[in-house]
Length: 234
Image (cartoon, rainbow, N blue to C red; front, side):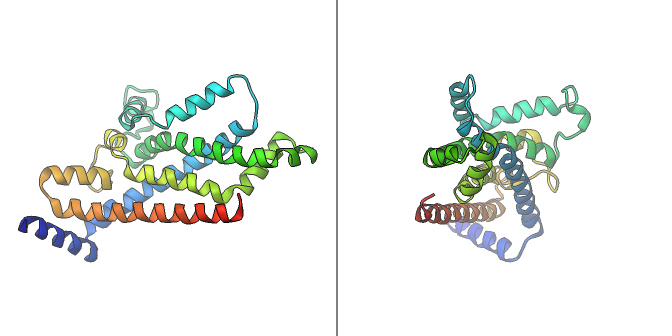
């Protein structure tokens, strides 16, 4: 019991003492996840909105596939990206394997379906409400798309926040393509797994505390946004 108490005390000391290794890992985690969320949002938000507005052959199957991709195992995504970026892979010439760039690619592939699926549902609900008005104004599908994305921008932030939360908690894919290299590709989740296995509970707990605080912050912001959206009737 005393060992656990000591580990907790050391963990707090690392946090409040702004330990260099701790700051390095947290900073890289945020950089990778925020970059992946930005890319996933650029792809997923228009894609989800388009699937909500446009009618095309195979649309229902595409929606089912998109929803199914939300549950893709991270290790499978990591394996696919690893094969693509390995020396014998089609993108091996880029030299991205075991770099933060590879981790960003893996996380982007992992969270884009989440952002797109949530965006599709949000835009679809708004489209059902605005459809008659938009049609009466003679709006084309592309114009409808821009209008719906803009009017639902607050609600769409919840989709982006969900993607960010998923990215920050991910371990399998980034471990495979990043390699968990100290001061190069080590992020919070992979560092927690490694340090726990090594018995370095202080650093693992410190990273765990920060990860939980980030998760709570993300959920709090998402709840505030969701409450604001309901208040405005969006």
